[in-house]
Image (cartoon, rainbow, N blue to C red; front, side):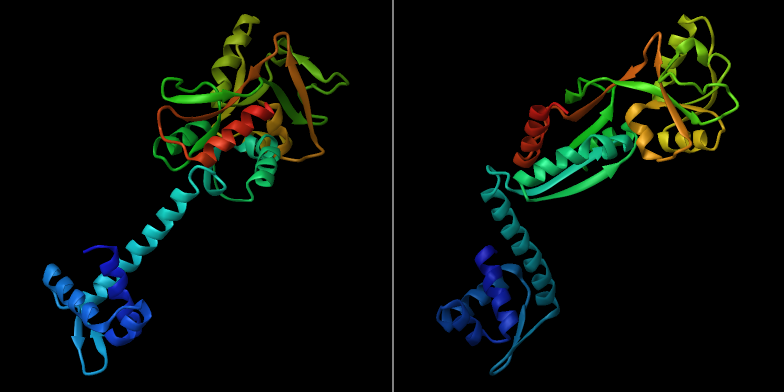
Length: 293
């Protein structure tokens, strides 16, 4: 059974008559009838109950109809995708990103990309870095934007500029951190109830120990959103990447950069090493690299 067999078969089903199908296909009726007989012999099933003027599809014929429609649609889409493969003008781009990146890093990049490739569709997934790498491993997303570190043996990457960690707390809080300075020394966080993303806990602890104290960790989380919400509720002091603060707009939140020493994190756009990337995905990576986000 080939593509032509399926096209001829579906024409008969849709027209309800071999004669009408032959006319639609611009072929003679006898060869079409013989081809369907040969198809039935090849498959070992009866596809039609033939009447004087009309044909009725059998149960086996209905199964073939369903499968043939799927196969022909897949074939059509595949041909279309292959024709557009080299241009990357159409297609679907699946991206996974950590929460803060959706708000601060991706919108401008997506806008420029859409201007150049207006027919590309997007599938977006959100999660913490570990979740994004899982989606990459399973092939659910093409490209991921994650916080470092990640396994460089598995993923290729384009790294983003480093970003400072800041503290966020409620204005007028009970921990005496208000003041005009936009910065705060790490040593001033001694004895303060800190809330931090699990990814940065080790870094914070090591730097605090080097400064001569052990941090008081009130809460650790896989998501910065609850940390910022708790900070706004005056439960503790959130330690988060600077870009994350915009995720919870609040006039009550005060932020200060951590200095002496400065604590920094970095993000990167990553994809699975040695895995095929569509032209659309490659265009996106090229734009990303050229913009130096």
